[in-house]
Length: 215
Image: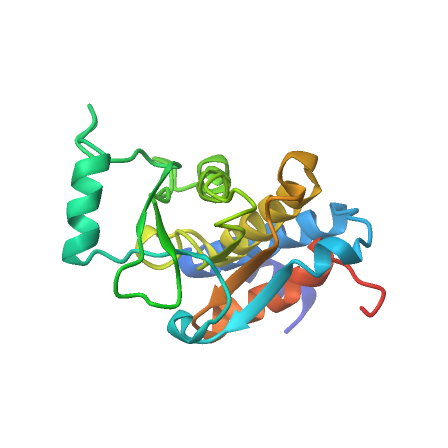
């Protein structure tokens, strides 16, 4: 095919599929973000973060789990402590609540947070997602509660692109651990990853947000 014919064919082709556009947009977002990062090596911070690939029920040594657990005891406690608000829910998007862990014996407390959907234009609401992590972390006091396990919030049902969700999770916690207000209160943060795709994103982004001399 000569160059003129090829260019004419390109000019008349249909646009990329929606899924391909979304994938390219996510890749571009991630590329721009990672190229612009300039986190310094901080081995003290690095010692406080862990990636865990597997079932959260197998995790040991953490006080708090961020989870959608909704057993009868949890439901009763939530009804008692978090009355229905003007929006018809018990907690607003970007906020968090805490209850006992009950049947989740590995943990002392369960944090429940409401992640955001995409906005009306289909864009990720990163500030609201970051708020979910910040509001959850606030329950740590450095004494009875000093460690927490996070899943990758807002992916799946909420439709957040994994590249955005993973970066927001890691960068929000990195910024929190640099804050003197939280440094002594937070002993350990675990990112619990359930599926292979999440695992790939976390493993790729993690060294950029938590660089190490070993990297």
